Length: 81
Image 1 (cartoon, helix red, strand yellow):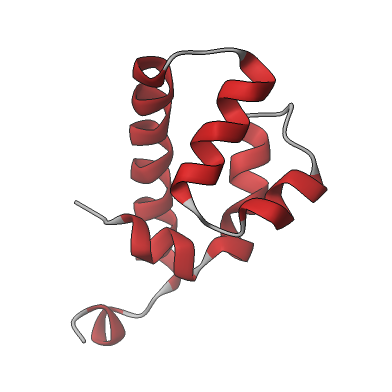
Image 2 (image 1 turned 135 degrees about the vertical axis):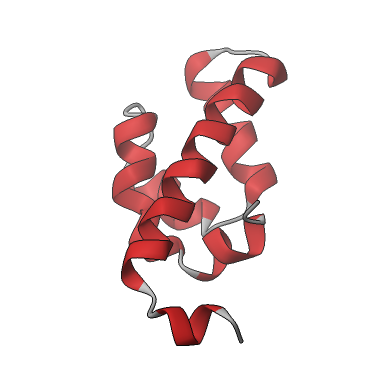
């Protein structure tokens, strides 16, 4: 399974996907979050008023999507490094 470091390291690539998943987050929110998982969780809880369990379920879906996107954009010889 993909770890959060890959998302954090490619944050700018994923901001569109984050906005698609959690549309109440603004561009300024995403810039402040800058790939930090705890800040993302806090901002989602603030905007949506949801509990951590809901966030974790949606985050898992997002991580799976991110892994799919990374697998499609990174050549296989670079993934092994």
